[in-house]
Structures are given as structure tokens and as C-alpha cells.
Image (cartoon, rainbow, N blue to C red; front, side, top):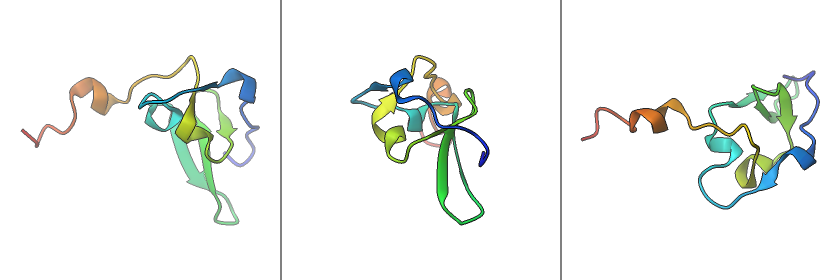
Length: 76
């Protein structure tokens, strides 16, 4: 992930609600060699600016498998 470029901000749209990068199945995070958190899109193989994952999304947004399966099966 450290070698990836950043997503062009023009490819993202502001969004209010739950359908943001953080809740997308393509969202990923990791830590670089300096122990800094990196957030990224696995589909694009590009990094996201810090904070972007909380307020933006792109046209490739897709729900996580937990949303599709209906949440935790043990709860009921």
C-alpha cells in the first residue's frame, strides 16, 4: 500500500449517510513503516486522504458482506 498513489479527489463525491468509503467492501487500512495509519481503496489500489473515508464515496461503492447477509447471525 505504501507505494500506491492517492485517489484523485475529483473521483469522490461528498456523502452524508452510511454509504461512505469506510463502509465499502473495497475499503482497506494498514500501517506504514513509520506506524502511520493508511486508508485505501483495494479496488482502485490507491490511498485515500485521511478523513476522506468518513465523508466521501465513489461510484464503485459496494456494501460489505455483513450488510448483504443481514448482520450477525448469532444475534437474533
